Length: 528
Image (spheres, rainbow, N blue to C red):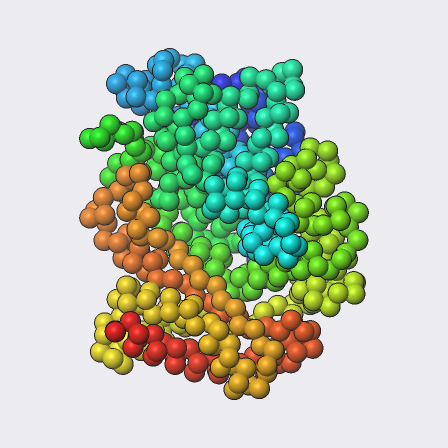
């Protein structure tokens, strides 16, 4: 990456990265890396507790954030190279087409990449559903500060790490304002805050102060997150593959960015596009995405661990644990504003080591429910939820066979409808298992997700390929749009769960029959 620019500040040094090699760091970024908000990312694992399945997957959110910054820098440098030779295009993005303002684009892209995950909490995505649950189902009458803050910061979407990220950036801005050397960083942070808002980028006074037009903000936003080939995905696919030992993440990043173009649409919008020479690299990216999601992110055991993390965190407020670092109520302590202040004061961080300590305390505590789930995250792997389906392909084959029984071709759309129906009948599956196995305390839970949302891709503002140019991509998208459905059974009682696990083979056989019945019901429902 010889043509990488480093932004609007003087270079300070380099970081040696396991994926990208040398990553240059300028003075502003170096200052940010010394703040507690970035330091805490050293102690938050990128893949949560996935190391229990892939032992080497212990890389941190900080490593990923530096990688995204580096790729965003590389992409924006390619954009700047085009602007230098296209005054018309440059005038659509910048108030003044000079090197100073071009470096501003690079700097904003770099900072957006560096800070895009600053709001992640302990064990990354694994804790998010629990935080959302506690916000929605606060049992204390009239106490909804966690919900109100999340709703306000996320504009009602309740996107957890994005909301915390905005709160943390607000605190970082105050640090910059109080710093004699970094006051000039504040307008950049204002723009980054707008770019990371869940509602999308918006033009601000700070953007105008920096000489950026609204089209340049949209372009930078698309570099970081565009659903197709953005800096975020380009880093985590490679980094996670390397850390887990999976061989699917090899991507020719140089070839991809060499083919990156900027163009103006008929309605005057500036968009990213990709030339035809980079199509095979794009195919490699989606191939890696499909296989990494199937092999790692949606691994049945990893999702079982994620369920345990979520259940444990949900029980913390009612467990009445003595947590000296936190306030009397855990929910209040980890609200975005409270946590931002605590990080500023170096009081607590709600990172992986802290959650490990809380789990240790709960495992030795008197509350049986929090103890049960804490133990599942430590030595007692036998307390993890039991996978009723070890591979989502098993359910796909059941759905295929059911459709063929009725003479229907198992096309992706029909399979998706059938599999989505399973998620709507989890309570029926639970009752069926309880009745047939005579285990009244069985709880059935499920996970459902898709590797690629085809409609989202089609509506993306980034035009990196023509759908008609690659039959391989079309076939891959069809397969990726079929939902991944996983089913789990567990008991909240330790002894009952151990008994349940001892019947795992029988449990799966009964579940298979129950699922076949649900699919038959689903077929009849969908046909009507």
